Image (cartoon, rainbow, N blue to C red; front, top):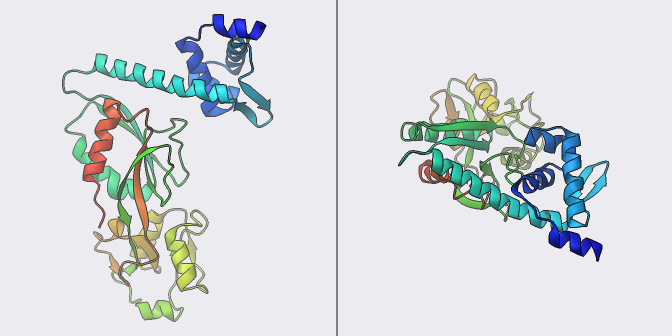
Length: 296
């Protein structure tokens, strides 16, 4: 009975919801404190006060961190709506008529950033000069659920179902050599060509799977951690490599040895969080990328 009375009388406010949301997103006191701009002990005391007020535990503690209960997850979902509403209100208050402002965080790989996203943003910037962009280029997946980013552009055939997304097309690849290189496809088939490949960094990349299927005995001479590096080494004439058409086809120092590889393609998805998609700054950039990004 005591916990029921406590839960009825206790009033959750925006500050408490912000603490809960940070804990659910990060899973540790230290990381939540870093997001909130306070120390871990302050977060710990805040969680204790909320649990006492509600009359029940919200997190399972372990060495791995704080795992949220069903109630904590439900409260976090409501907190996300409050967060989105507050951000929309701030944006509306600060923006001039027809002005879109604020920071938009975009996460993708270096190849997609250089080959597709940067040219699209270059077209958008003069139209909305008050927008600021934080661009994260890496092979690791930055979480939209934890709001580490606002928009993600990912090559995948299985986009997360809880996100809002649009397929931008198919990423197609071909086998390339340097334009001045004497290498031909017959050299590749005879095992006389050096391979440049991202085995260590991207073991499940379509280009790696294709090479291992078509040329199972081929061992890369150069292993690199970026497809941009594959492209530059191939352009220098150091060997052959599989490259996406959108990145390589405009380069005069590259020469395709094959057409588009049937087993070397994947889908490109533009993704955002359902609670963020209506924010003006995010909707503006999302809509522009959806209209502008073109794949060969």
